Length: 579
Image 1: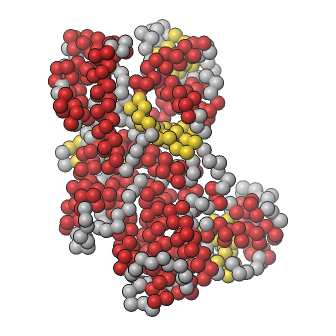
Image 2 (image 1 turned 60 degrees about the horizontal axis):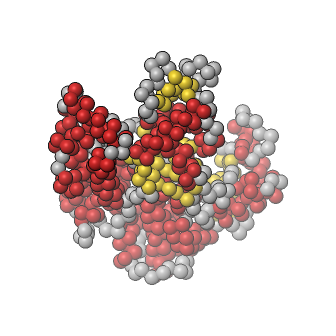
Image 3 (image 1 turned 30 degrees about the vertical axis):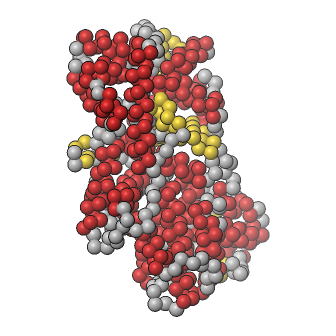
């Protein structure tokens, strides 16, 4: 990684002056974000972070003084061409030709691994992670919360896998419970085997809506309870119908997830943990953690004073399990099966207390690994509607985004002839959805807007795709030969330097996202990259420039496109080459 070599070089000089090991200093040296106001240094050292006896309330002018004192002891060398101080920082400017040469060589050599190979990650142990995300309920709506869970979980899995961790992607379906009693009775009355095969999600949803209208009828209630009881007793006929509901639904989910560019290693579900949740209840009983209430329900006391001021209900009065009991069984089962280092659950923030309870009960049961479980929660999205009204199926969203994008492409003057307009519209439209979703903190609620998401100017996914396609066609136009020897002295204009400085920061941005699992750092990095590339594209023409200059600029744009494409793929976006 280019940045690593530079950080290392600065750290080794500092280590002599400060008498600290260079390893300790590397973390305190960071690449400087590019500024609109132009000339900035490439790296800065935060003085506060390296002063041993530094107390938190050190005055700004003291730090300023310390920075100046330190700067005076440092010398420029073959790598660093200028040293200056800022508020509490020492700033380093890298020799301009060395900067251009090193960054471009590194990006073109590492390709999609640029930034990922950085030594920032060398201290991070490779781990095995189970990530549970998406998790819709069969026969119910695939609502916008499921969509968020799907794209966020996919991003976390992509990032971890890219960084060399082993990732297991699990979709935990709502495929059990009383509603299947109703659904079974509904299917016996209104079901159609052909429709179940051809469009299972829609057909089961319609059947469920129909039977729900009659759900208050005592006779229907009794039939539903009977059906579900038979299901729990593994009655062959009942079970075979349920298996069809589940099997056909999963087939259709797989097809739709494929459109989203998402896959799962395992389709699990609550149904797997029916028997196992009874084992969990026995374990809780054996450990003296299960208490019976007057109503006959089973609870686990989670209060500090053990006065039941905080408890979690894990058993119904008839002895059957609840959602949390099945979650306990699933967690224990996954840990036994995969012996993973971490388990991540991606659901909306309304389930925060559910997961707190889950992890607390696991800890009480003596499972120390519960400490390494994590709930990544996200906010709610308001106002996502399709032309047909409220979102019921994921497919509706994908069709809507595709048709709106096709319309926009048809009316845009810049649209090139693309081979498959439907597919291009889908990829660009998905980029728009994902970027709108990932721009803020995951935990924030936001108001969804089709118009804002699909704008071609401004900070949108459409703009990312447009920039990628534009840079790609620039390469196509000017020959695709391997650019090996670039004359770095040709890339000294401020607009070229800005792109190079920005590329230098990529590993720090990836590191930040890998620490807090927030995609927004990568999103804002890529949007800035596109803005900087757009300016450079205007001011640094390839066409009509002397061969050596054209070659160097082409190399700069190729490097920008390589990092842009790699970053988009981490976010779950497939970059397009024409639009």
